[in-house]
Image (cartoon, rainbow, N blue to C red; front, side, top):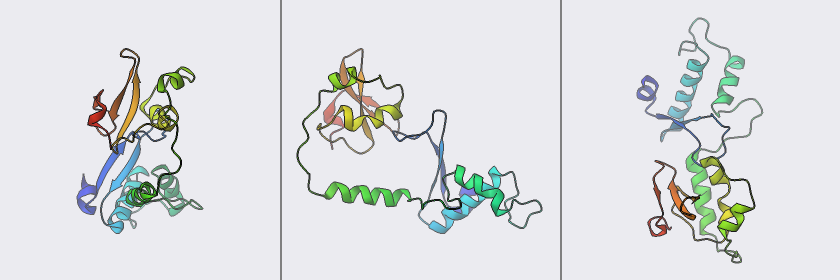
Length: 175
């Protein structure tokens, strides 16, 4: 809370919500509208992770080489690391992709048949990875929703990643 107040950012641990993360892993998201404040928060978090005092001049503060593993562990740049896109940059790129004219229509897959031909997904991340394969050619959902399959109802249902709310009504989730 002190880091958030000092830097005017919000720190959030996230389980991936449909993206690929190793089982049992969480990622730390540093949210804020000012790049300098996000960088300051990242430095403070790395000092905390390294077990050092927050001031760079504090006795025993880790050297930059000691902090690099912590930076990489939090998704920050390490030596030779590729630049990391900020979430708003990724969203902007995705919006631009959505505005392009659609290519040739993809035949609508039969989700039941596809699911019978592959190992059953065990996690939300796995369901997220399979969206384009299992539901190729199906109507787009609102951002933040994915399709899953209910074995007991033998039909698809929809999961909102942000709060894990579910519905069987496609009209609730169409884009």
